[in-house]
Length: 188
Ligand SMILES: C[S@@+](CC[C@H](N)C(=O)[O-])C[C@H]1O[C@@H](n2cnc3c(N)ncnc32)[C@H](O)[C@@H]1O
Image (cartoon, rainbow, N blue to C red; front, side):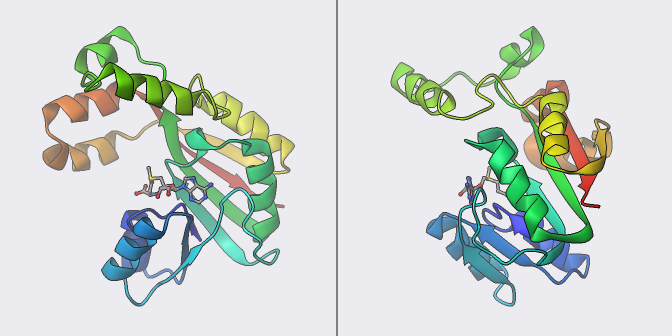
């Protein structure tokens, strides 16, 4: 399961690696783009925090750049634990995109208008990780939800290197300066 599949970029990677999987997103425009890209893959519309899908339906759940926006990550992680088959694995790719050190502040593009910045802040105030999703806070909640063998990998240099050409030097440096991580966790 690719949770919060967006335009289907992670889905495309999964498909190319030979996995048989389902994509899920709550936004129809995102689903449309993903379906156009991967017509042979099933994409369903649902809320990742409460999917209404049967228990133990998936061996692996992958999710990139969703966790930091969750309203109730504790409930979401319990839901993902329920969705996984015994021994199933959760893989979270995420980061703290709120707190920025001086170097990142220097590189980050300035918000176009103050109206846009205050709208951004308004939305941030409504999410659980309004001060940024640090890996230790995420792993603590995963453990409470019942996940075991939780491990955090901060070494994303290979990924950043591969993305650098497409991103340009400014975005690429910004990525490297951020608190980004991959968490894997298992349902026993
Ligand atoms: C930043 S995009 C990431 C897309 C994709 N995972 C990727 O890495 O390319 C975030 C996606 O999460 C979806 N999303 C956010 N909250 C969601 C929720 N509670 N349930 C389902 N989808 C959600 C949005 O519609 C959007 O497509």
